[in-house]
Length: 338
View 1 (tube, rainbow, N blue to C red):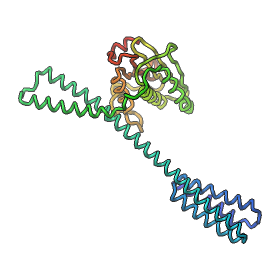
View 2 (view 1 turned 180 degrees about the vertical axis):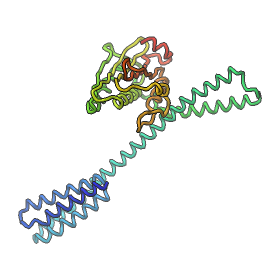
View 3 (view 1 turned 60 degrees about the vertical axis):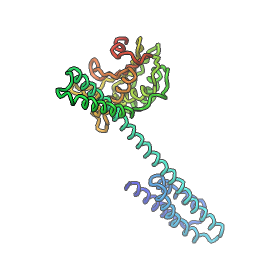
View 4 (view 1 turned 45 degrees about the horizontal axis):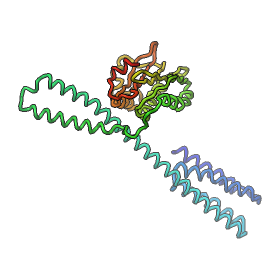
């Protein structure tokens, strides 16, 4: 903010000095000077918005207008000066309005991203808590109930209330009802390759595309699968070093297809493997720890899974198991099928 203010001040000062210091009568120089004032004017409106832009337009008009009127006594020149001042004000207001509108859109976008993150967090929390509720219910059934039989009904009722609450939290998950069906998963592979190729190249990382030559047809929604796959690629880029490669691979099986992201970075430490898909677990300084947990929950809701295994030498292999048609098929059967 301070550096921008200094830039604007320096530009206005230098241009004003050139304008006021010129003693010649060449009209071309005066036209040049009046056009130069647009530089600080546009920058101010773009950086700071309508109010500051209008203020700078008034300052520039005060520096430019009186000097031009005093130098030229012809009435037509005065009209040109007034028109130029009006144009300064108009440009500052328009640029400022566009800048303010852009800032509001960015704020709304950021707010939407935060709401989405909260929704994923709630969805992931519900997934974890639901497992705990199931374990409690199984333990209760195996034990034959509580010793105090009068408390059994209260216990069952409270567990039921908790289950309903968790199911309500789970509804914060992104809607999957209106997503595209019947697609070749290789399209996701190619789209992600195009999307991340430039970013990876800028970091000195090579993306290698290895789609299954026979294609990977699936009847599942593609948008959510693409989002999960993109997050895996983004993580691999973050944890890879310059000169390394990342393989984007697909493989078709009988009941399921697999999308893989294979990197050769530092991999996942043994102590972190067990926590890898836990909600809020992250090794990034600016991470939320939601992408893996919410991604696994989404895929399991669809009958698939997201898995991790260490590379042969080093690195990590993340796989998205995508059922081809039968979303009710057990995950274990899918793993055998590929």
